[in-house]
Image 1: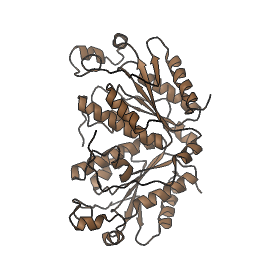
Image 2: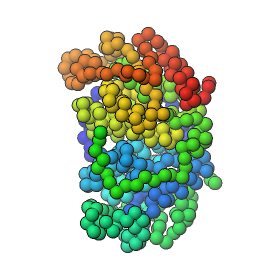
Image 3: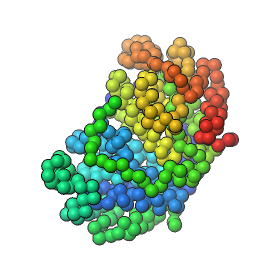
Image 4: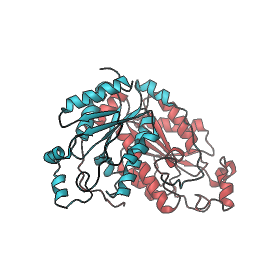
Length: 203
Length: 203
């Protein structure tokens, strides 16, 4: 638990409710949390998913390691403590987007189960955990960004799957097997789930 | 400047552009940054503004000391360094909302000019600084939350306007004088400005 340092603060209820937001947008707010190894395909799936949701009028927005690490979390590294704080902040931002009526798509390795579960606890009814399951050998073979090679050479320390642990989800809402499913199949699987949950309208 | 600790990261361009978002929503994304003393009326104006924007179909969302301090920034206190980090994080989140096509309304004392200017630098074309100008004597007389009383008694340290500085904006986009304008007048003034800037459609 993070210590609550800020005191003398009172919760303000805004006049525009979440129901108002969802009525205007025509869809629910939610967080779709993609977790998996580097190179498992999280960002690729997120980008395609965002496009497909947008085509249906669903206001989706991707938070990913790239845009968050250059901005909000640029003062965090990759130590265990920094990874935990990284995920905590992203979870809080995803919650704000969800409350604002949007569908946040997050694409982070997020290797620690406890960190992901803390995000889930922030918004249990709105949190969709998607495990992008892909064996490390396959990710390493792809190595799109050349990071595994650097990690094996010791040029990157604390690299998930090589020199830092990945704890797979035990009860994710969904698992996509990105080593044997196409991006299209994975995206369709997630969209189908979001339809059943009433988060995305049918195509 | 905050040190860039995160390395090995590449910027990903999502397939949904900001123009796509703005087309679907029918309005621009922007950040309306309210700054002023505690009790100057920032949150009151923000709540009314959000309602009025929403009535016009503008997807506005309030970030304020209350909801942010209980979540994203609950591990920050009120020291100068923590205040700076508080505003930095809020600025980054407001930028994400802006890029997502929403209108972020922020209601924070944000006492340091340099901190606000750093947020402006993140999104110079989308940043609307609104100085909610109200003499400290008036704020203290109102003292809705009883904070000035506590600050004078020394029960709250580093309280802006009493024991910590407030640096007013030098060139804000707007100044509202909340000691002599009604909330309605202030809100109408901001709405008029947002109309002229093409951020809000006419009523």
